[in-house]
Length: 173
Image (cartoon, rainbow, N blue to C red; front, top):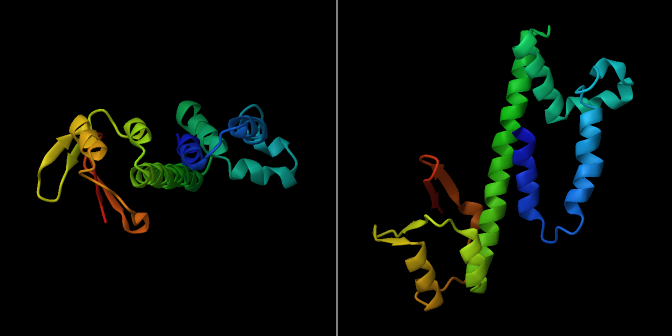
């Protein structure tokens, strides 16, 4: 979902989750439900609070869902606004999440933290070198442990990602 993608981006940047998600639940999710037209029409709340609903992905999804399921009467232009808003949140949220988790992985590699690196990379990792040699996760971790690879830094700002399919991502930069 659009909100899930944005929350994933936030979660990727949380260093100490001490009460973070409690705060999110109480002060973001709960008000979002009450002020997004989910339980009652957005028109029934004061105009000075409606902006909260308008920026809420839940309002966009709810209004679009009502339109698609039982013909809720909204202008076609608003249907497109809903779709574009939700798609934009998904794209932006996932891009920020990928960057956050990649930054964490890169930091673990620079720090030589094999335990953290093991957690952060997929079990079906296939590391492809520029000379087209391949290593699976086990071989890659072994090479890190033995010092075959030593990373001093990463320039994450110049990294570009190409998604080939559900399991294949090319990171270059």
